[in-house]
Length: 311
Image (cartoon, rainbow, N blue to C red; front, top):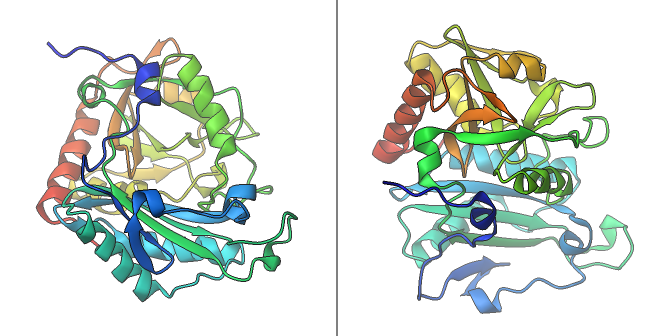
């Protein structure tokens, strides 16, 4: 029988790595050993969270939705007026080289642009050159048993940063808003929290997008709720759901709409598709993973492991 792991322990346990082999990191134009991959203490990415990133999956040697991730990364950089040090074609090649150098067929990639080394002041344009690094390793965001029986989450007390303050379409290095909500989840012995916006509408979770199922239709918060434009979320909307004959509507939702749903599930690059069985003290549907969530998760797994689309 599968033993349930303590969520608090799971949250603090480092993800599995490539093992005894020395991990190779692509750092500003060269592959270096993990211990030599260093960023200056004067880098504004470290000092101020000034930069942007992508988390990307590799399945069977194919980089899932790589073109979409690269477009979003360069769009994020443009929005914060960060000039990447390398063109997209070079980052594409460097990412593939990093995966190959670590001998990985299934992996998680973290691709990061930092503002670069500058002064101790806020001025971003006193950083003459942006920094870039690429990590390719393994990741396990949630314990496998949660994908079978569903996960418990809470509703965070801390609201999502308003769109007017920070465009959620920017996947920036500053994740403190999400981290503080994540701490609420960990303190409640769960691994994820639903975040509401300042108007009380459901936005997203600390690291995942959210969907509900009601009478066979999927609903997910729209852009104006203050969400990241998730790549896996979009794949569900445009590819998986239509292939299964399911309709998706983007609609503002209150937490009561979520609690009354037949099913709830989360999507994300690291999370993939995972069902929610309980929110705070409320059981969702019949508890466990709902049938539509299961169909979508199975379809996702089949799709990415057979021939993961890179577009």
